[in-house]
Length: 438
Image (cartoon, rainbow, N blue to C red; front, side, top):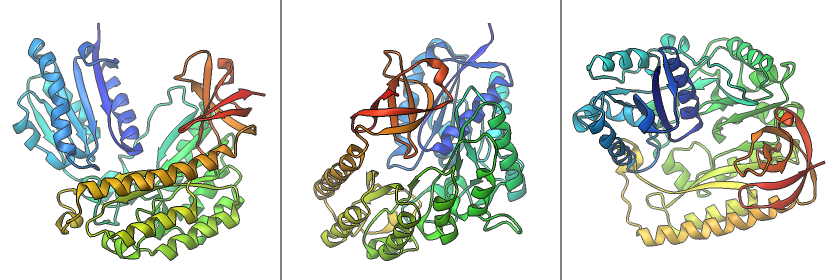
């Protein structure tokens, strides 16, 4: 019997990509993935530190594996990702049964750490790498019968929004060479991938720090020309870096899906300034108007923070007004949570948790109403759906997505996976649709 590993992934799409790379690296040293920690010789957590008390939650999660380690002392337990980057060697001191810790820039060293742990030597690597080294370490991952894939085009962030920990745990921006990106996508398409999502902490600033590199709009144009690729998406965008050139891509690139995730965070200029977002509410609305002008069918999703330090009722009402004006198809809404080491954590916050929760519920009620009105427009329409695989709903159902990134479940044969098929929407639910194959 070979060695086995169990991996849990938390957080953003970047962590999903990192975990795919972790799988490839571990398979390269003879480990096979299993679906339960009890079956594993190696247990790994790939962590996220965006939310409050993330470190505490990780430590609590690690406690689940201690009884297994007590029974099988040879079990190796490791932590990677953003919490690992923050905590570093301190984690080994806090958790005596933890064997290895690796930061966001050190995934490539995981095999070395695992082999070291097999020899009963604990280790931690959380150094940030220099720019040239990082460019040489962008992930190249194997295709696993996927119809859709994330392709990392840049890493890190230079924006330093006052509430955000990302620049401190992911490092500064570095953009991957455009020729390398296009070559990877061509290879993925040759192996059956039909949709790619270009991924970065702030894809809109792709290439700005690299001499002679393409802009992000120019990169989209290059990828749009890849033969055999059907759909193109990207995430995530920062509004301050969304150029007219990029906006116009939604009107002229046939493979670019008619959906964009454009985090607004607040509708109040005063709060946006405290957040260090670099734009006003009017700036944001001009870009939304530009997107809807070049692509009337486009649907927007967003992120919104409620209860930022010092937020008044007027500030909150400005956010509600923004939601009414833009009419988001969906919104990821969060109660503000301070992150140690960020500027916002130093701000005085005299709002009660009861008030924050009340505002949060008001925002959710408004967004739920708007979202339902938008998705109900699809009822009884026939929409092209790219079939991604078998549905979790079972009963012979497949699932795919519309151009707006909306999941549609429908009954169909497995041979349809990888094809774009016409599906009539017969029911609209909160987070997905039910359809019938036409």
